[in-house]
Each structure stands twice: as C-alpha cells, then as structure tokens.
Image (tube, rainbow, N blue to C red; front, side, top):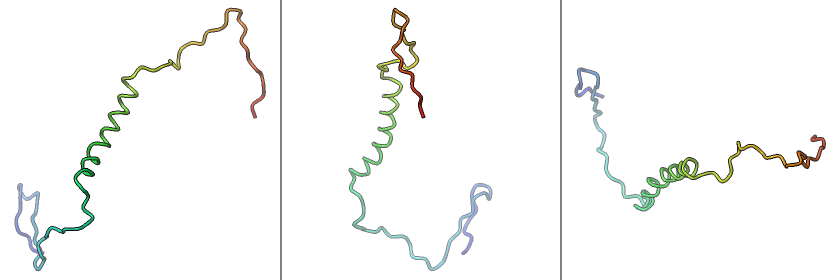
Length: 84
C-alpha cells in the first residue's frame, strides 16, 4: 500500500493499493424491486408515528386513576378469599 495524499491539515490520509481491479456493478437477481425500498423507507417511521398518535393524541376511554365511587349505602360486594 502506498500513501497518496494528506487532507485537512494531515488529519485524513488517502491510501492506494496496487494491482486491485476497480469495482464494477453487479447485476444480481437478488436486487429488490423499488416498491420494497419504499416499504423499508416508509413503514418503520410510519408505524412509529402511528403509535405516537395512538398513545398521545387519541383520548383514553377510561381514566385509570379515576376514583372509584362507593355505593350510596356504603357497602361493597367484596368476596374475601385467600390468594395462594
């Protein structure tokens, strides 16, 4: 390997290697179609945004911190049993 050049006040060094063929494009059958590229670009971000909208924007149907109301007679129908 041989040093070719220094860039940006010698913070970056450019190297080259002899006897290496240049890169060529490969026409492989595994190249995905364009619509799959769009799916990978849109669906991950879109699902994250949809989750944020569902959690933050839509109102909750029931407030989990809301106080329970006690019946007017002060009695609740509780079943006392042991949980094992």
